[in-house]
Length: 194
Image (cartoon, rainbow, N blue to C red):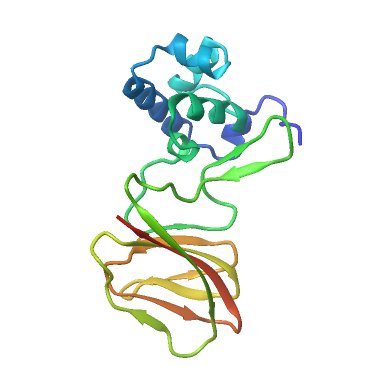
C-alpha cells in the first residue's frame, strides 16, 4: 500500500512520534552510544536517526526494528507512550506503524516490564452471572483482548464494555469482573505478575 503524497506513514497511522523520539534518546544514552555509532550499527543514515530523535522523522517498522536490536531493547519500548493504570485500546486504535516494504501494520498493545511473568488464558463466557474476582497478589495487572461477542470487563467499580478487537488493562490487585453480554463471548486474558 503506497503512502499518500506528502504524508508520513508513521504520522498517518497514529505512531507516537514524540514518544519514539524520547525513547530513542533515552535508550541511546542508556547504552552509552553516540548518534553516529547507533546509526552505523543499525545500518541507517545518521541524519535519519537525528530526525527520529527530534520527532520529525518517518519511522518504518524495519527502521525501528533495526534500532531496537542495536539498542538491545524490545521493539515496543521504542513506540509505546506511558500508559495509565487502567487503559482501553479500541479496535483500530493504538500506536501503529506501517511497513515501507509490504502491506503490514503493527499495533503495540502492551510491553512486558522487566522482571515480570505473564500467564495467558483463553476465556469463553456466556451471559448471566458475571465472573467477579477478588484482588490477586499486589502488582498483578490483567490484559484482555475480546475476540468475539461483547463483555463488561475491568474493575468492579468501573468496568468497560468491550467489542471484538478491543483491548483493556486494569490492576488485578483490585476487585474486578468479566461479564459476557452475548452468547459465546471469547477473549484472551493475560495475567502479568511482577
